[in-house]
Image (cartoon, rainbow, N blue to C red; front, side):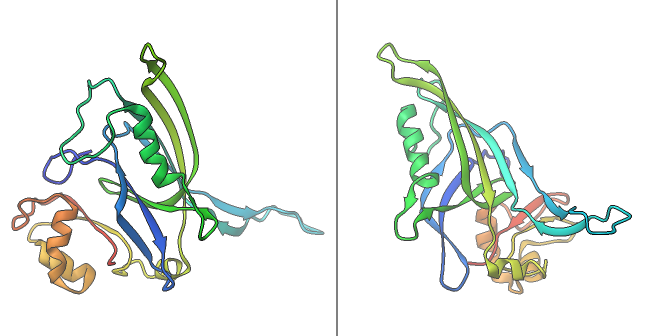
Length: 231
């Protein structure tokens, strides 16, 4: 997937922590950037209804019960043949085992202090998803003569999560603490959009960097920009 200026953006999975204030804090230095982006991903949303019959029921009412967490799933390819070059600035290991281990440290390691897996942020283009790993299944498809893997494909699924604070904010969809995707209209400027969403135009440099914009003074109508939550 490409950024707003047409350059390739790597899917990035970053470890998160939940503060005592109920906010999600992204640990920027604990992340893994994909060398090969997925070709597609699935985003599933489900609503639960209570369909248990009651005494004397003559119809079939469907009563709302709960909103289930969002779920996303996708496949990742890991290559150690050297055919796929590692992009500049990406510190992913050259070998497949090292790549899988580096990813596992972000998504699979157990938080001994809280006795649960870590939360993660998944960022790719306009996708901004917070969740925890539900499942990972890896198939090894190419090997060195020694038996060391040269290529592997992993199927991953993540369940979304929302803190109590976020659930309260969701009642107000215009809250600056939520993420927003905006389609640029004629006459829009980045400072103006930041003022509209955050109430402060001074956030435009951060938004420009987040979207990979090199030229932000003239925005092309129809361009879709992502405005992340305020930290």
